[in-house]
Length: 327
Ligand code: PMP
Image 1 (cartoon, protein in one colour):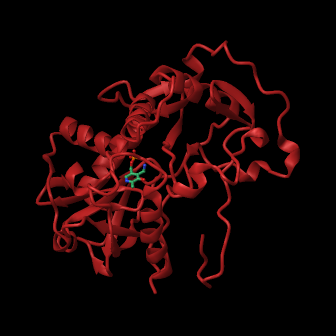
Image 2 (cartoon, protein in one colour):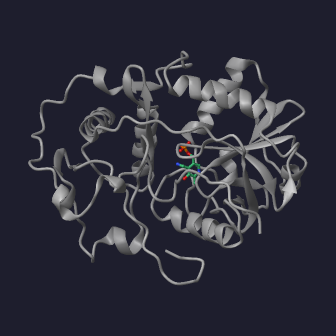
Image 3 (cartoon, helix red, strand yellow):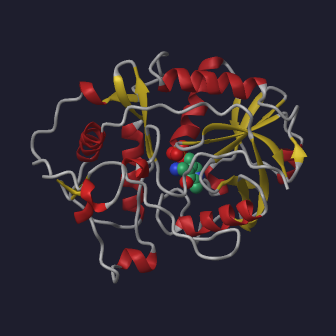
């Protein structure tokens, strides 16, 4: 990818588990390979999901697994990818993978917020690449947004859509809070239909907070009382400045804190979710059909430290946002 010096730097592949689900079978990590001439490598013709697993008193619980897998199937349908799999196959495979990974840890909540910029790159136009499909190709756009932001000393970039309205971050949806009303760009602003975005919408409804999906001007970001990102990796991350302009008090806002609190209460299993949002891995029926892959494949030099860290299962672009020192 890139480094500050402009020299190339490899992005480490997060190792989640010693096995990989491949066409209905669990194969060893090292046996999961693609050819250098494969179509997906050259043309970005992949669809994928980034899903998170939380530590709860009832053991690891996958957050909104079914919704993620439905989006996965939708992405494949949009790109006319034929396959024989049903949503339950993918859900069962995920449960089994978490079971085999042995991941148990949790993550600390983000309190302080991050400094972000509006990107010079626009989000995809609806008639070029569908933002609602989570395809590999879309993430070249995300990488441009993210690299520019990092090189300029920001934690993340906010992309506008092709009309100049606010769209989303490189790997997160965005929310504004103004006069007690929570707003987020509609799907027509070229945003990914985020599962966390939907969770925030449902949490707001439950808390009696007015939530509106509406087009948002860039300037509305600067004058908002509060701003926050939502995403599987980012969870609920407050934004404290945009283009070096302080948002509200410059600290996590009251409504953001309220939503964040409820979100984490739900993900930790302490609070009843508005729906069946947690899949408790240890309480799912063990998947009998597939033979376990033999060996641990741990003798290849990949240490445990290469695992993704914490309980999150996230692809490279969707990393937790970190506050960066202002330039
Ligand atoms: N937008 C983009 C471009 C993303 O990559 C993500 C992360 N999947 C999101 C929004 C947030 O979606 P979710 O809440 O489903 O992780």
